[in-house]
Image (cartoon, rainbow, N blue to C red):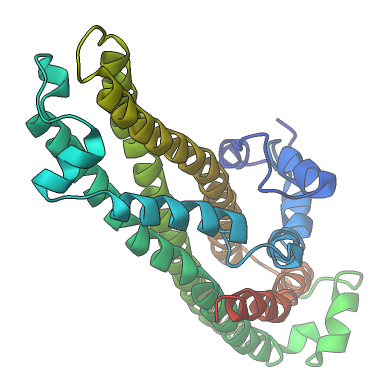
Length: 339
């Protein structure tokens, strides 16, 4: 690890190689973040990476939110619509299935009804997961607005620190001047900044939690389909395939075809959800990066001794804040596609 790189930096960016439908530039960005970052690199990258990630999402015209595209929604909505058409009343379900009784316990009507009850419950969960995902652009816009407003309060506080030169235009030159020790009044303002950065971190944590909730919902929805329901469906199809030499064979083959169609739709659902969970994972990582920066910044504020150290900090913090109006605009653009 390079000198000055905190131990947590490398561990914070274990990303999957497949970026969320982004171009090679963004993939290179994620790969770069997998390496330990020295302090100056952290300060530089935090000013551009959140903007790059959100901008790449907003520029994807097929995207209707932060984690979903029109193709994702279409496949998942179609799956749910198909499940709804499967009868739940016993007589109609038996007709759809193609047989009314079977000697193989795996193909008996009651276990089949139990399986399809689980499939229906699973399909019902999609509406809740989609709603949570669709709420993310609004949540991001709120997070960005909070960061901008609270950050501006911190910058206004810095204007009261005489050793920084008062006007913001003067801050850039402070790092090249002879350092002046911070007095008690300066330190009190710096402590006010600690409180404001802590408030920003709360806003970041709230959005990070919301993204994590969406990812968990999508992970659970995908995994139930992949490891439980589709596996059970394929087992039923295998059992029907073993059936031969009975008068009900042709009817059962029709039932097998119905199960096969459902299994195919479920497979498409699983594949689309891989993309969705990857997008959520990358958003999580980006916001972990922001949290890490804020934690380090709060700690650093408590160690600043002179005007040069404070000037360097404020310049980087000002650069970090400059991106959030743009991020808010991107979030509102993504939200508008949901209307």
